[in-house]
Structures are given as C-alpha cells and as structure tokens.
Amino acid sequence: MDFTKYIRDIPDFPAPGILFRDITPLLGHPEAFSEVIDELAIAVSGYQIDKVAGIESRGFIFGTPLALKLGVGFIPIRKPGKLPADTIREEYTLEYGTNAIEMHSDALKPGDRVLVVDDLLATGGTACAAAKLIERGGGKVAAMAFVIELAFLEGRKKLEGYEIVDLVTY
Image (cartoon, rainbow, N blue to C red; front, side, top):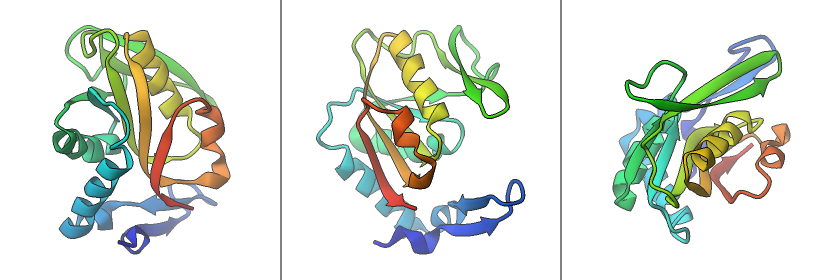
C-alpha cells in the first residue's frame, strides 16, 4: 500500500519554513492504519522482541497495536511528570535548550529486548534518548521502527549502531 497518499503535508507548521508530515488522515482510514501495523510487524519480525516502547505521544498510537500484534507488553515513554510510579529520566539536547523523557523504573526486566516505536524519525534526538533510557533501565534495544523517516535530517547518524526500520522515507 502506498502510505504517502494518507500522509498530509502541512506547510509552515509549527513554524514558518517547516513542512509538517501529518499522519491524522492515515489514522482516519482504518484499512491504511491496519496495514501500517501489519507492515511494521513484518519489518521487525526478524528481531527478538520482549517489549515495545512507544515515545509520547504518536509512538503510543502505533506502538500499542504493534505490541498487541507481536504478543508482547507495551512501555510508555513519556514527558516528565506524567507517569505515576517511580521513574528514570533521560535528558537530551535540542537545537535551543534541553528536554527529557521518562519511563517507569520497573518497566523492564534485565536483558529485555525492546523495540522503540515512534511515528517519525527526524533528527534522532528523542529516539536516541529513548534508547539510552531503555539501556539504563537494564534493557537492550532490539530495533527502532518508524512510520516515516525524514532522511534529509540525518537522524540515522545519531542512531548509529541501532537497527532501524521505516515504511515511508522523504
């Protein structure tokens, strides 16, 4: 299936000069959404996966049904202060400043192999922070899966050493 016909381009969002790749039309089309989950499952079928970790918030949208399809648990990776139990935190650098993500400290058993899922790979900063968080939590990153990759932003360079799959590359 050609997923690009379900991804809408929004110019100048969230700031002038940015071309935003909007997945909401894809989410509104059940056959396309289902096919994305099926294709992601096929793309990661060669990896041993114990858990799927979705990065807030669009990583939840794709990661949760993918975890169900793979028959494994789901781990939410969230913005600071959003998880109710004890957490571990990973800070990362943005172009102007820093940000952080958190995961429950008991989300992983030592050696769990985790698939990191998000809708989009851009610069790789958030995915890299998620990988560090998983590793600090005792897990191993089995692979990373994205619906869309913006290759011109070279996010793969920041994720060198990790296995990466995507369905649509711009």
